[in-house]
Length: 182
Image 1 (cartoon, helix red, strand yellow):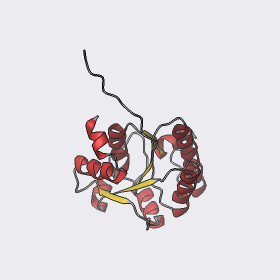
Image 2: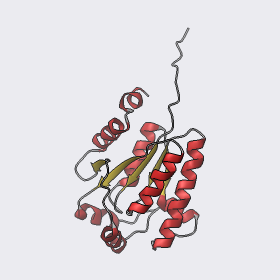
Image 3: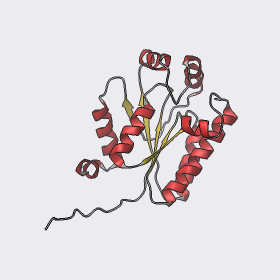
């Protein structure tokens, strides 16, 4: 008789993977999703859904991030963990996540993905299917970027392997052993 492995569903988590365009955050968010079974809510895809592709103005960004947060709440209330994938370059956008997480009795985990500017320039110069942020958009967002001063994880997509980044993230989230067993 085969022994069945008992699986227990853990409480939902809210993770924000953020950083500048071209830093590698979307690729990393997808890898983290595969390891944790969390749902990724990507700002570029939501921007397409709300018909704001290519619009990086402040009001458009606020609308996109508000929609992402609504989607996250629905998923979390259904018991799913969520990864929000976007630049989150302004503190007020991050604070909205923190406030909503508190309402849901969660602690959000922020993971910043960084890369050297020359690496980013190379990535941005290649045509990307879901993203049309060019180097000018990168420079604009970089100029507006407000550093996160509270505790968070920083991973570097230009000098760490995907496995190293993932291991650090799983340890940061406190689910390394659980994720490695699956």
